[in-house]
Image (cartoon, rainbow, N blue to C red; front, top):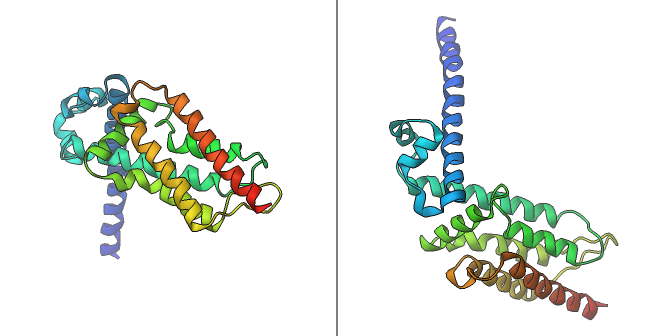
Length: 214
């Protein structure tokens, strides 16, 4: 019994400690997001993050060894959010107007990080610069897999499925645009114009597929 009491006391102490640690981590990540959103990656330093988060630099280093580790966590969170939106879009029936699910998919992949598109773009650029293109390509690969298995859900109850080759071609064209959109070549092109042109590409491809099937 005494041993159990000591164990319970340790667990009681540990819980608030873990909660405080998680709170500090969230403060650090939110501070990094705010800095990126206002100043870009150039303004992001560990000292600046600590100041915006309202903590000491020593406290920051208790949770993250450097700036790169913070960017890594933010990038992982962003891609996880994108993946969740993709799965939700391809799991729910929509109108038979193919533009609706296509638009939702494009918004998911080109989506803003908590409404902050600059943060989204910076995180994708950082992933590409570090050679972590698999994190950027993961979403199109997921779309290809879902299109060839579950298909695009429709209110008619008959999902529009693509062959593996069709899904591969469409989503890797999608991936190419996604990757290029975060590079210097696309800096002068408004993001909404890129999304609109991509929507036209996707819908024309899918509509041609539907017409051929009919």
